[in-house]
Amino acid sequence: MPGRKLKVTLVRSLIGLSPKQEATVRALGFRRIRQTVIHEDTATIRGMISRVIHCVQVKEGDGHEA
Image 1 (cartoon, rainbow, N blue to C red):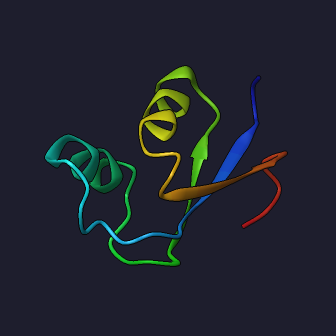
Image 2 (image 1 turned 90 degrees about the vertical axis):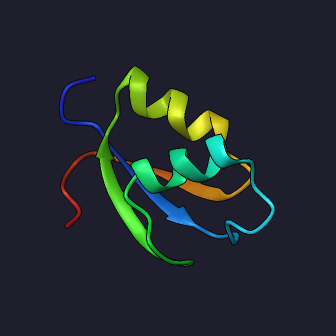
């Protein structure tokens, strides 16, 4: 959906994750716990989130939040 955004927050440490999962978290733009990043709602981003859903919290928005 055009204009849809996802607000993704890292809520769990990267310790104990597989190297692929850790790379996915880094590729999403996370550097530290409780950091929030905003991404476009695309199939690629949804797929990345689904690989590390146990480490992140996702909120859907309409693209108007900063």
